Structure formats: C-alpha cells, structure tokens
Image 1 (cartoon, each protein chain N blue to C red):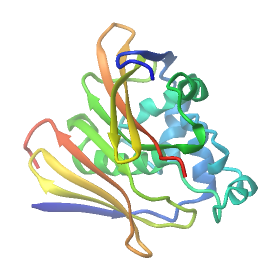
Image 2 (image 1 turned 90 degrees about the horizontal axis):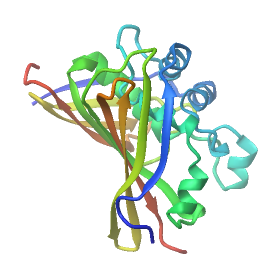
Image 3 (image 1 turned 45 degrees about the horizontal axis):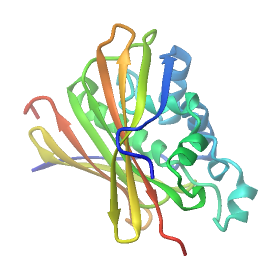
Length: 121
Length: 127
C-alpha cells in the first residue's frame, strides 16, 4: 500500500462563488450568508461538487487524468469557508481509496474511490 | 412513483474554453492537469433541478445529494458538444431514506460515448 496526500489552502467564499458560476449551482445556501443563517447554518458552505472537483484535480496531478477509468465520491460532512482540506489517496496498482478530511479536527467530509486503467503506480 | 428507466431530462451543451477555465480556477487546479474529471457537473447550467424533483415526486426540503461517480470512455476537448439523457436507473430504500440513482451518458457530437455520470439523490425521512 502506498499513499498520496495534499493539504489545500483555506476554502474561500470567493472560491465557492466562482464554482457556482462554473458549475451552475446557484442554491443560495452556498453564496447567500443571510439565507444560510436563516436556515440555521453558521455561514454559507461549499457545494459537495466543489470538494469533489478539488480532490479530482489532486488525483489528476498524482496519477494523470488520462489514466483515470472511474472516480466516485460520497459526501459525508459540510465544508466551511476557512477549512483547510487534507486530500488523500491510499492504495496500489489500479485501485485506490480516497478521502477528504478537515485539517482542523480531522473530520471526514468526503470518501471515494479511484480506478486506473493500468497497474503502473 | 415513476418507473425505473424514465428519462428525467436531456441536455446538450458546448464544452466552452471560458467555462473550463473558470471551473479549473474555482478548484485551484494546477495547469496541465487537462480536462477536469468532474467537468460534466457544468450540465447543471442546462438543467432544471426543480423539474427533476417534481417529476420524481420528491419533497425538496428533504433532498440531499449523497454522492456521484464518473466512468471515462473517450476524451472530451474544448469545442466538443456533449449531449445526454438523465435516466432514473435505481431506487433503493435504506432504513427510512430513499436513494435514487440518476445516470447520464454523455455523448460527443460524433456520437462517441465520452463519460457516464451517476448521481445519488437521497430523500431523508419526514421529521
């Protein structure tokens, strides 16, 4: 078994808004602070697809995007502005387990899997 | 309850250079990593999610997105056009939650299957 790891910069509201524009997710929970607070949240939070895309970019950097045959993720917890994320892949050959956790408290926010086209690692 | 195999919606859209760059910047992507693996999420721009919720007979207040997966078949490049039908392929009861799997097979303009995306939508129990 081997592993890959990367820690992100803190997630920013600007980044969340930029992703809303990129992906077309304009749920106000992700960009409208008064709306999110009225719904009982401490602030806006990142869309799961943003975390999925950040992890996917790390995966592409580690293994090469053209080697990826399949990529899957499950959302486990919310990601807040200011969170630094620990992106991790553990495995060998063509099968890897993925996870994203909050650096501050270690909470898992996303788990996933990766399948590569060949066993070169 | 709609039957499995029902077509929820159909999208067709261009893979735009500007959208690609915005997507990559939002994730802090390193240059040279190529087409973002989850780029088909941009189909959200071309979809009516409220219509999907209504068609499946779901209660919007109890809906969460559980996860997603992608299968890669042929490369996508800026300038391509993608088209795909979103189909309800599975429905599963887990305790009091209902899990719906929606599959979109994205084809390029030349007809080649490029990417299959499956989204899991969860309807939480009534409180």
